[in-house]
Image (cartoon, rainbow, N blue to C red):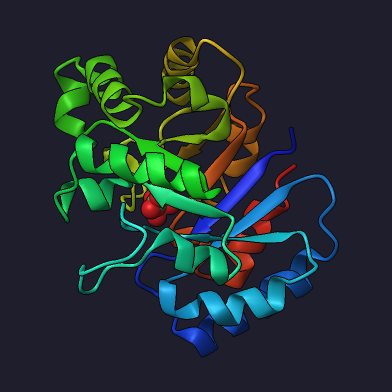
Length: 240
Ligand code: PEP
């Protein structure tokens, strides 16, 4: 399985800025052969990014979706619409959705089920807060998010990309050490009971990507801040 570099732009980059970013990154990385790059712009930039990534090795993902295919859900986006815009991936359970927007394991579970039904590959995020880590409950928290998110789809874990994203490392500049990341990745792998893809996310930058990617347990990264600038995103993509 080729390593995955996924760039989550969060609520940044309008369509024109997204286009510029993609063009500059593509120019800088050239022909990428042995890795998968997933671009995850805001919904409003999906169409313009899709145009640029068609017939390239850059893939398209969305940051969220609703669990219904259509209906009276003002302001929400159906996974089917994402597919029609060329998305192959969707991020679900991101800590900002859980902690800022109040998404529960039950909501994330419904979204995961629908994503699988309609053929989107979920990037399912899990992670503990600083307080939870300090109190020694990291594994309990991850187990709760894992069990809650995967209720009824336990046999479909091979269709899901997992992302360990410690909340204390997201956007804070504090990266988990490779040892800390590996420990939790091994714990998640134990729950999977079969081979799976597990990404690490949390302040991944040009100066820590190479060390993180040297770990066999880390099959790729989910990158926020460092994916917003062409130089840093390109360097992360070109990890050695
Ligand atoms: C993220 O939002 O998934 C993330 C990992 O952000 P950052 O790289 O900025 O910590």
